Length: 194
Image 1: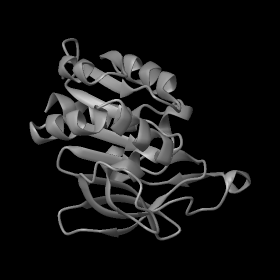
Image 2: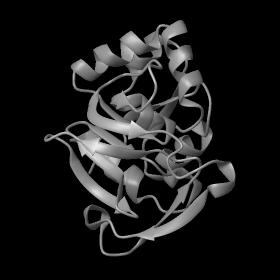
Image 3: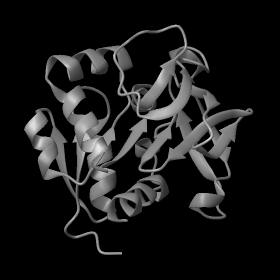
Image 4: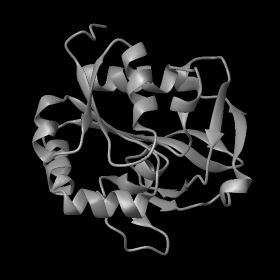
């Protein structure tokens, strides 16, 4: 896979965007921190990091990023959302009318595993990413309560969906950028390259 010409944007409004950039650069791609709509024209893919989904959503609207991201998605740009990013990709958010991209046919439950002090790590098997178990870091994590027919469920923890893909969109409820495991980011890079 040729990754040299690929540039992936990381939404840099809040959250662990630097960690995502470092992980993507380890995977051999260029990165760009995205804060303005026009910057999206320079990238082939976008990562929406964790953080506070309501705040990120409001800033996306305020800074004109919401419509631009939707337009680029309509042109086929791949998007990966972690934690808050998963929430922002969802069509439905239980008990919330916050701004969202509504690009994935999923219903998401926010803070589903509990508050900050209930954050945890779990080992899980994700056949899509190989035979070796993956350690996942869940911090005030959401989960997918319902997935539409076009959504591929890639992994569950405690019977709750924590990784899903729908076409060019990927969502995880955990933070792979906080580990040394590059497999989720490499998978996304392959989605962008494909």
